[in-house]
Image (cartoon, rainbow, N blue to C red):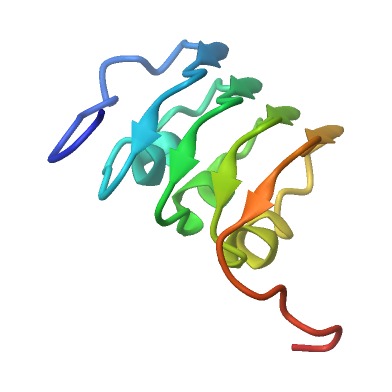
Length: 105
């Protein structure tokens, strides 16, 4: 389980990050992914996210996000939308923790 503060600032050239099968309750780690300017691929399948904020959307190079079998808050869908470089978004078997937003909201 990731809790508390986790800095990714020293990983500026990291292109691929595998975080499968983790519990990201109250984690700063996911929020700080935007600090990885070279990150192209994120795999975090089978993980539990209690929140998934806008930090991921600050990534200017993210091309592939695989979250198969994860538990995500519905806010994830709003927060992933601004990723203009995203080519692959895999959400097979995802359990959304709350009601999905209606179209237009």
